[in-house]
Image (cartoon, helix red, strand yellow):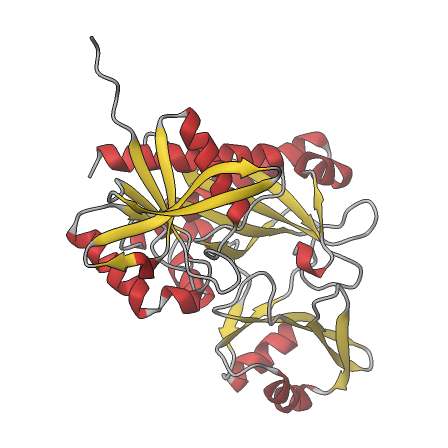
Length: 365
C-alpha cells in the first residue's frame, strides 16, 4: 500500500496583539490555511513569545461558528518553513523576534521575507544598476541644504518621504506656484492640509517645524497619469517566487488618488482601477501594451537586484510605480511585506504562490 505523503508545516510568523490573539491580517492568514488544506499543507500562526523551553505554541483555525473564525492555541511541532509576516518595523526589532530568528537559523528552518526595506537603501542599490537608473526620480537626503535648493530650481513639484514609513504616511508635497511654494501634508481623510506661500529660503525653516523627527528623502515630483475622471493614479505590481524558486509577476493593480489626496492609498480615499483600462484611455493600444510589458519587466529586474543583496530568502515584493504623461515608468517604492491586494484574482494567485514557494524551500534546505 502506497504511503500517504507527509504534510508540510508552514508557520506564519506575526506579532502579539492586545485586543486579539495576534496581529497581522487575519483574513490573509485564514485564506492561506484553507488553501493549504486543499494542497496537503498544514498552516499555523505563530507569535515569537510563544516559545517556552523549546516548546512551540501557535494558533490553528479549527472551525467556524456562524461567520466567526475560531482560533485555538495549541502546542505545535516545529515548522518546515516560516513565512515572516511581522507587521511593522518596531515589532521586527523586538528582542523576542530576533531570538526566534536565531533559533530558526540554528534549527536550519528556512524563513522568507527576512526584514522590511528602507527607501534610502533601496534607491542606493537600484541606482547602481544602469538598466534601472532611468526609472529613479532625482532624490537627495533631507538636511543637505545645497542639494535641496538645487531640486527647487530644477523641479516645480517635490515630495518629502520618510525612509522608514509606508502606505503614504508622513508624506509632504511642495508645489511651485506664481505666488510662491505651497506645502501640502497628507491627512487621514483624503484631504490635504495646505500651507503657503513660501520663498525657497523660508521653506527649510517651515519644514523643520512640520516634519516628524526621523530621516526623510527629498524627491523629484512626477506628473502622474490621470484617469478619465482626472484623478492621479499609480501602478502596484506584485512579484513572487513560485514552485521552482523563480520570480514571476503575480499581478498589476492600479491605485487612484482620492479627491485632493497626495497619496493613492485607499486609507486616504483612494480607489482601485484596471491597468488595461487606465493605460488605454490615455495611450493607443500598442503603446499601452508596451507600458504594461515594461512594468512587468522592470518589476522582475527590481526583484532580482534586491534578492541578490538580501541576506535571507526573499519570497515576494510589491512595487509602486508611477507612469507619467508620456508613458515613462518611475520607481517609487518596494515593500518586502506586501499588503493584501484588493483585486481577488491577484490575491488568490498570491496565496497559492506563497504555498508553492514554501514547498520549494522545504525541499531545498
